[in-house]
Image 1 (cartoon, chains in turn red, orange):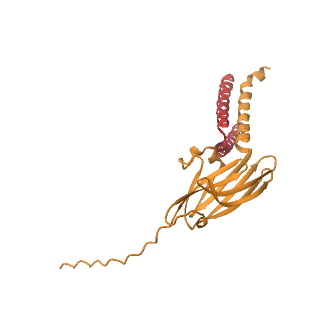
Image 2: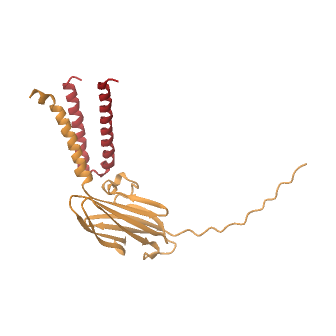
Image 3: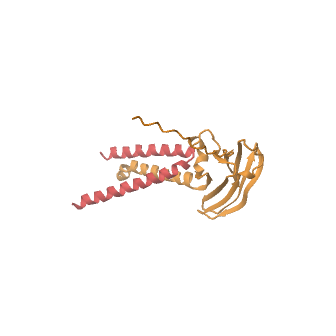
Length: 61
Length: 183
């Protein structure tokens, strides 16, 4: 296996683990969020995806 | 500068993610959280602090500001009250538990001071002897409210009390004659 591919696989596993960890913590604590907190999170998630989309568009993906 | 502009939206996305984490930490983790464990029959029920924040989303939906439990007169109901202090400072408070009926206190269950260190936990327990509650009419169901007070927090549990049913008298077994064998 090429070292570059191995690096990508390890990177992919790392990213997937990070996302799984964040999703698990979010599901544990989301029930304790207040209504303004929920609204704030919604806006931030929308912003997060919008900016990510714009970034990938800009770099030519 | 061009490099900075190239990654501007990525930085903004990272800022949004950091904001999300900050909201979760400040709004959903930091603070004082209490959990009530109550056992009726053989079932332990867990009432988390989240229930009181969003009671309309929890079961039973008809009790928006209270939890409901059922018991039989004669039961001893054990309570376990856990207080978690998710703060950078110590937390001291007085815990009071009492039984109310028609807005009048009828019994004290527990009263005591609790001091919890930063990011610590404390547990207090008490028990309710249902047959000792005043105002019970034998054979008739009754309702009481159990109030748990913690400084500015008040938790309400509605207690539905019923009398045990009379034991069934065993009936003698019926002897059914066997049908005659036809030859």
